[in-house]
Every structure is written in C-alpha cells, then in structure tokens.
Length: 65
Image 1 (cartoon, rainbow, N blue to C red):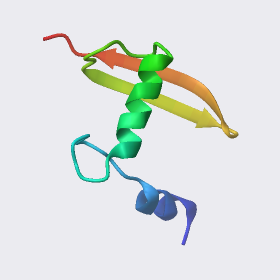
Image 2: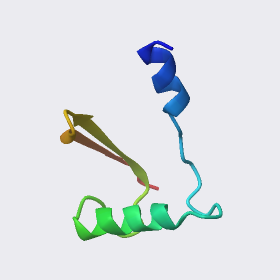
Image 3: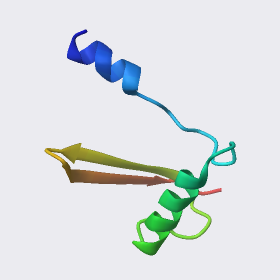
Image 4: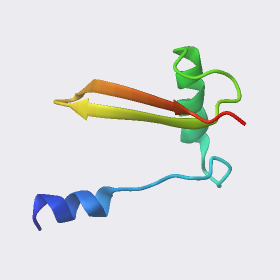
C-alpha cells in the first residue's frame, strides 16, 4: 500500500464530543484549556500540525455567535 492510501485509512474526523467512550476528548479539551489555547465555551477549530515528531504550527479559528 502506498503512503497516500495508508494516510487516508488512518484519517479520522471526530465531530461529537458526547459520543460513548469520549474520555480522551474531554481530557484533550481540558488540556487545551489549561494551556490557554482556547477559552471556556470555545466554538471553532484548533488545527495542530506536526513535523518530525514535534509541533510546527497551530492555527485557531473561532466562531462568534
């Protein structure tokens, strides 16, 4: 299997934090809050890019209602 096909198989989009077994999502959210990357009641996107095992770029897009 070539790299592009393998990446597509491993790709997962998580859209609902209230699904069963979502403990890891709550922990991740709490971590982002603790690091002040997001505020309380945040609505938006936080994209983290990795390079060579480390974070190379973080992009935050907030939705105002």
